[in-house]
Length: 50
Image (cartoon, rainbow, N blue to C red):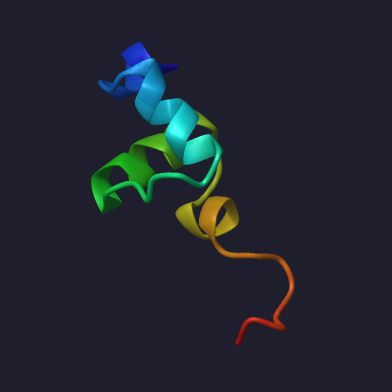
């Protein structure tokens, strides 16, 4: 996955563990790689945070 996204495994791990907020470009690459949307990946399902 990291190779396909052009980042290190540490970066992928940090994003997964919410230790790093990806750039918009990386977020878009992640969404495309995972066949989903940026919103689906990074916006919480519950609306209580609004």
